[in-house]
Length: 174
Image (cartoon, rainbow, N blue to C red):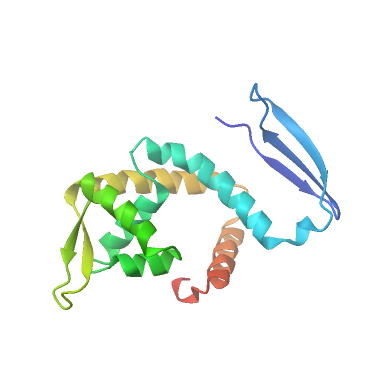
């Protein structure tokens, strides 16, 4: 298991204990912030990287990526969802979603079906195999979320989610 990360902030310095040397030993970094402590995007990026770096190998064991899991999760909850709707929700290009969808179709996790109400578009439908794999991925993600946010109180975790939803403009999801 990775060494725990510790972050200590002062007004102008950051000390971060991270497992990052060649032997895997914890190394302390003592850096001047010089204003970086106020850059929200930087801290969101670091937090995202730390969470994703630990989640990716766990999902890879299921032969899935986080985006593929998200697509299946949305398809299960929204049986008539389209690739365009998923791309809009995730804020990424439709062509990128198409690549993930193609891989999921090839692996028998989802089907792309014509939309009965609109012959020009298609909907994504999760398969039984996809449901089984999604259930396993959910267990991995839930465990990962508990581990990754263990330093937060339940109130802090809820507040963090609300603030992230607000930043994303997705208040309806809270």
